[in-house]
Amino acid sequence: MRSLGTNINTNVNGLMVSYNDEGPVGTPVVLFIHGFPLNKSMWNAQFEALKPTYRVIAYDVRGHGNSEAGTEDFSIELFVEDLLGFMDTLQLDQVILCGLSMGGYIALSAIEKHPERFIGLVLSDTQCLADTPEAIAKRMAAIESIREKGAELYVEQSIQNLFAVASFDTKPMEIGSVKEMMNKTTAQSMCNTLHALAVRKETCSKLSELTMPILILVGQEDKITPPKVARLMLDKTQHSTLVIVEHAGHLANIENPHQFNQQLMNFMDRYFPIDKH
Ligand code: MLT
Image 1 (tube, rainbow, N blue to C red):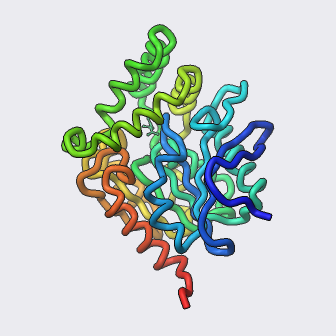
Image 2: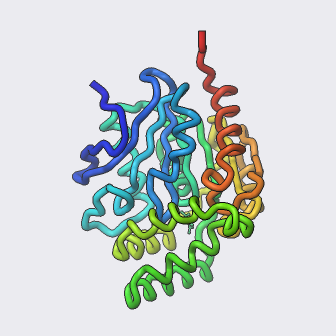
Image 3: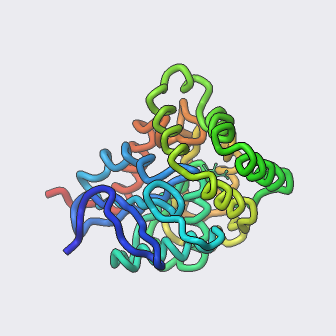
């Protein structure tokens, strides 16, 4: 019997993984993967919009939210093994995958290896490019700083890059909840993940082989993965649509949930319609 609800625990690859699972049984499953260093609660607004119609699942990547970290060095490959292990545990043969930023890196890498498990893809504020040498150097400096002084300064500086300028005046609640998610991630897990992000491989070269429908979303003011890197993914994919989310930076789903959810619902209605009668 499937358990429904929030903060459910299951064992994946020897680790306790926490997830939310809501919506009607038997409908297409949208599986959400969060960004760094956040957790599954970043998808709450998308759950509210989709769960009357579709089954929605979001899990905490190891070392984030309420999932255990384990003792291994993190890598995107390890996160992909966890994703596939999680899908096997929940007996999810095929899903529509929705990843934001790091969640998109995991999604693209998983799809490269096992395209048959994914029938649709939503890429939000992410990219297929690997880190440049400058980006790697910045991540290494961040790791040093977190190890020496703790994560507080890193959190404060990161927040400045995550949101659109106007959101600092208009969205204090959203900024507060993102800060809370970041502060929940331990310094150890932050460093471990920063290293995994720095050494990740590019996924652009395989994008043209993907046959599932793809929706690409990006905040108009995203400074981390800006619209031009979203356009690069659009150009390399066959069945994709790009939407620029207004009044949003890197966390488009949190800053403009209205537009984001509308686009997500349109995509689901178009490719995975449910007979509502
Ligand atoms: C994220 O939101 O997951 C990170 O910004 C990804 C990154 O730093 O490349």
